Amino acid sequence: MLLHIDPGSPVPLGDQVAAAARAAIASGGFAPGDRLPAARTLADSLGVNVHTVLRGYQRLRDEGLIELRRGRGAVVARTDTVSSRAALLPHARALVAEARSHGLDEQEILALVREALAEPV
Amino acid sequence: MTATGPPYRVPRRLVALVALPFVVTTAVVAAVQAGMRDRLPAELAVHFGPGGAADRFETPGRFLVTMAAMLLLGGAAWTVMAARSGRGGGSGTGVVAAVGWGLAAFLGAIAVLVLHLNAGTARADGLSLPLWHLGVAFAVGLAGGLLGYALVRKTVPDWPPSQDVTAPEWLDLPRQGRAGWARRTQSVPMLLGGFVMMAGALAPLVVSTMPWWAAIVLLLGGLLLVLMAQADVVVDRRGLTVRLSGLPWPRLSVPLDRVATARARPVNPLGEFGGWGYRVMPKRSGLIYRSGEALVVRRTGDGREFAVTVDDAGTAAALLNTLAERRPETR
Image 1 (cartoon, rainbow over the protein chains, first blue to last red):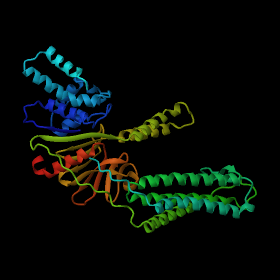
Image 2: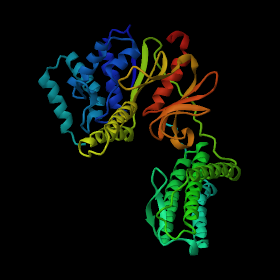
Image 3: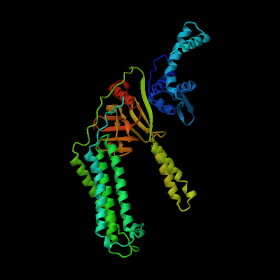
Image 4: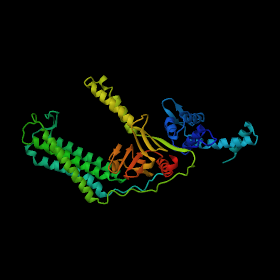
């Protein structure tokens, strides 16, 4: 898993770690059930605190992309769609951010998505 | 990003050369046995205990069938393995052929010596195998192996084919910040073998004849195997580091200033490294868990290669090249 972090960037380091790990899962570099590098290994390698890496991993767990278990480390979620979800999540976030900047509320955003879904393929 | 060229076609002559000693040895054993048919007892002594005394007996016909089956089936398996390993090229294929020659010669020598021992006796009960017979068989096996090696070298002179070389790649990374790549690599057969050995350590509970120290040996051996079956591969500002998973030591590393070029290419464990595990050969060393994609680093200075079999090796190689090139600033 390739990570590039920039301590000078305004994006928190934990989020940078999460973005890199998400991209690795999205690219199919990790299959469902594969183990991500140990947080300690990554922290040591990038010269950051181990809690920073763990914060990134916890984000991915909250997104349902990985499972975190004591003693087993970080394992990619065992669902077939995990890499697609990892790839699409940033797009979904961008869509929501864009919609909010236009002043739409949750119901209106969901309605837009349903509208798009209802369109014949 | 993996360098997968077309698989190299193994020369027919090489395959024939690997299979030859097994066929020839079978024929020699059959001929020797036919030649001394009248002087053999009804039951041959075919197996000898630790003290050298005969402890198993078979009719001559059955002995020949057993020997032929062992040599021909074993030879077929060896030939298939050599042909498969040869597909990836590598100088070790000659060694594989030579080991086959040695094995066939050793088995043949044992068979002929056993026949010779039985010849002229009426009953095989009291026979025992002198220890020097084993020495002779080893010597014959060694001579066979050397002969096989020389023949492979002579008959297939352009072997091995030069490795398909792909250009090293670089990553387009932002200059500021830090980059790292990490991935775990493992050998499932080693893991399973280790667990089976550790499970075997429980055998004394069931089989009372097994000594307790055998259980300890099994337990420790199994534990060692499990510990060695997994490694973490890391590329970062320090270079390439390979460490057994969960252990601070031992670690293998290539510091950035020793990196000449890194590339991903498929490796052939038998052909290039003479087997699996941590391998040290004259021109290369490496942690080889399987065949296929590996990160291969050529070192400055001695020009030797260090390889580790790991998925996504292309990314690791590109990052290592990039970091090595920017070394003054990554340090």
